[in-house]
Length: 253
View (cartoon, rainbow, N blue to C red):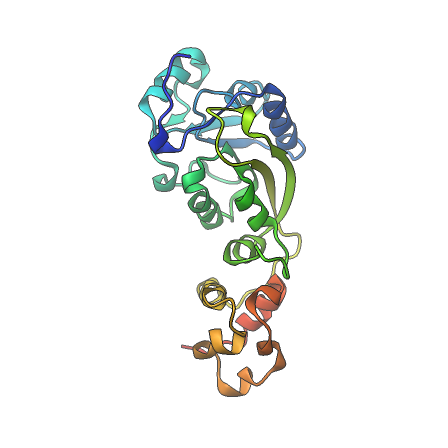
């Protein structure tokens, strides 16, 4: 191996070719023209991605040593690598594009929120996450891991939990199991009053998740609205669409 692993960047490199192929197969189940790979590392996925015909590929990699390795091993990547942190880059394409990556687990939630910022343009995302984060993103109401991440992602995307990945598929093996999920835009948009107040509602509701909604979000609604029996429930019992309905009933600032 011609590069070193950096703990500080949360690097665990995928070495199981079967898993790489499964990710690329899942990617190609939906039409794509432009593709951004996040954190290509040693190129486990990249070597398959460069073979997909008729697409414009870019990769974002902050580690200079990995960039040098990738450019030497796959010369076709020479002008396709963005040498920055994914969390700090500007939108990489005009028009719609797909995002794929074996995401660094220490910033995977922040990566998701960046994808949400770009959701007008991200038509598909396939990502490898720590298993417990993937379960949280995909969770439905009533599940104990259903929370802020579940609601905010599902407000804009349909989440498919594709498959799990064993620790031994990586070098070095992480201490946690992993899973791959796919996000596709919701077929029917939720119709929020506005996103800023929706995000505030969801975060406030789950901030005190053991309390009833009435106690957790009382500052966001008028007393007459709070009398509704929906407020007898706790945040984790409300569906994404119920949060969207409540968004329309919040106090106007």
